Image (cartoon, rainbow, N blue to C red; front, side, top):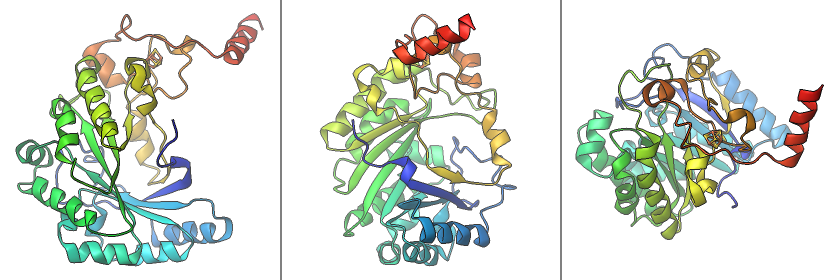
Amino acid sequence: MGRRFNAAEYVELTMHFKCNLKCVHCMIEGTMDWLRPESTDQFERVLALNVQQRRWRGIIFTGSEITLRADLPELARKARASGFEHVRIQTHGMRLADPDYCRELVAAGVDEYFVSVTAADAETHDAITGGPGSFDRTLRGLEALDACDGVVTLTNTVITRLSYRQLPAVVERLRHLRRLAQMEFWNYWPMRETDDKDLIASHLEVLPFLRQAIARARAYGRAVETKNFPECLLGEDRDALNNDQPKLMIDEEFWPEFMRNGFHQCVHRSYCGSQRCLGLNTAYVRKFGWHADTLVPFPLERATEAALDAGHSG
Ligand code: SF4
């Protein structure tokens, strides 16, 4: 199935490491204080590269909460002037509840908004974000964007033990949004070897809720993507799995932390033909085991099989 957005066409810059929420599933909560945002020089280098080579069609501003950067409109204007057709921000969306701010960003060239919606109701969302009133403001932000011409919105709901039962209800809660082009469901990873916060849910328990959410979102005309879920469990919805990410520019110190996840573990990995599955990660296996009898490897492509045979005989 064709993708609504192609990650290879985007470059992502972490431009700000401060946030006014405290999401319990935050990937960078332990590193936010010391990771350095991309410098102005690095930003200018990316712009210059795009002027010369048109390497990317879109730029994504991210980090923690980018709308806390006062010069965000200026960053967007510079990116547009450097040939970027799309400027996306990754945000909790609360500041977008101010229609004037929305209009300012849209006028500056921000045309794609990737907004975190952690649950389907205010009580659950606010408990996850640690911000009383955050659900209402995020929803008002999405609705304010819905009134702006020329923008598309995307949402992400991180799948945790606290949110997974609400995935179909999230789709319903956002049903009225006309500009919501894509809904994403990222299965939580803890950035360490253990699930210290007890947030990882069993894939087997998540599965029916996730598939129901995928089906409903598609019925409403949304593109859907999920990340970090075993491909073989998704059945006919396996095309929703997309672990691709844009080219990410981030402090190099981030990567040792990221590697602690230990993706690509699966007892069937060496003979599974899946090209895009991340398998399980260390914290997941420690909590729930290998699901060896439940995960079903895909057949290898013939060319891969031949290469493996050649390797064994050599
Ligand atoms: S068998 Fe393992 S590697 Fe293959 S799709 Fe399933 S989880 Fe992924």
